[in-house]
Length: 150
Image (cartoon, rainbow, N blue to C red; front, top):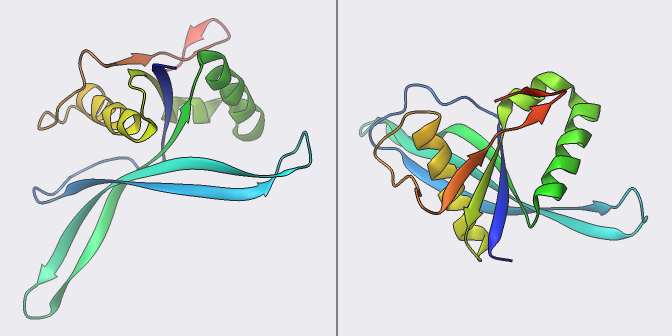
């Protein structure tokens, strides 16, 4: 599949970003049992956040994080719609306002997440120091009950 659909779930709203912050993306897996088949499996996902150093030289510096985004990659738009329906069942309709689906033209999952996060930051958060992934990424709007959510 050449097109990937990346679901961005904004866990921590990005405000007052320091000038020396760097965008970090890490890969995680949740291990557990599938509800439908009762087989052990894993659920891969990515987390992105901004990391920066604070403190003084005398007392020592520490790293802090800001703007956490949970990212998951899907191969089709139908999978993302099914997952959004499950989110509404579990968390309610309010949680859909924090979710964005970005369609990315990229064969690699890691690069697709990188482009999707940068596209979200440029288009929605208005941070313009990044490459926006213009020809490769496009935000898909979530429609629920005939109304556009985000």
